Length: 323
Image (cartoon, rainbow, N blue to C red):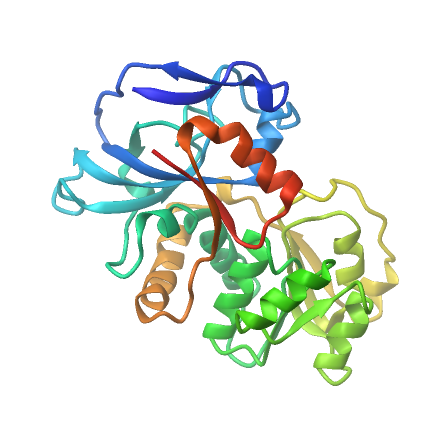
């Protein structure tokens, strides 16, 4: 089978097209014919050599969509369309390939109204978003901020919070064109930080109240700014660092509102947490209450260009490889 493998962790040029044996089906694994793979910031982190737990050579990609070939039993019979997320592409060969043997517990059936390309970009973003919302005790009527509307986590949290009854489901962007694009897509509570500060925008939208829940997927100075937008006894969850791993915070932004800050590592979440999240996400996909946004697709052989476009082009929506 063909696969795009990182021969070393030294940048885009290290991704090479290779011919590998088709994976064998073993106990607890389901053989998929891959149709699409999501491209994520973690893929770039690994390829750049700054994710210290991965070892080269490695086929990247920790989410995707495919068709069950065998091993799925009655839950996932042959021919079923499925999507998945797991440690693939980080700790073992992943989704940038034509075939993959996936752990059965990592699979979810794709709703009939969702195509494979859209499905490939769902698991990481929406599972992470829903698990994060659950862990902070989200319920209808809460006020939620998820910076970076064009990014996968910011967009997924905003959509889920809105669909689940948030009083306000806010996001942000540093790019005025993206703010206009978000508005055209129906995201009416997006703060254009080229025009106003993040905290000022949150308090304008909430009438001075602030955000009960902040879920930050990009890190850096945005995290510091988001802390200043917290409401009384609000909570900030940090779970990504594509902007930067380091920032400086003003501790009074935690102390004065008696707020809290926590983190989330999806690789450490138990199967039950992910299953519960899927039980929320799938009906919302079926009803159309949430809709994944795909910015651009690339063929598998152009994986390096896809990653470059994601990281340097900063598109609005997901980037997906097709096989």
